[in-house]
Image: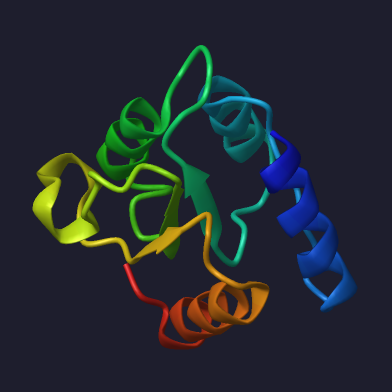
Length: 114
């Protein structure tokens, strides 16, 4: 929660427009009611609807499946390429620097990585 807000503040300071949700269900509700974002920064550990469930529902919906998504986690046991449920999304650890996060977001948005 605090890490999410800190990174959101830094991203806004760097010029990104940031919308953050307290859980996956709130994020899905937001997606259903708004134009698609340039990218999704997805935390895996959330209440109500965790990142795995969110990602499964995102990939199942043609409106959202191609949105560039970056997995954001503190779990050292998670490897984006080794967790099929996450698809081929890039992964960044919460311990990463803001410069690393910003570079990954810039890259996925520029390439339209899916």
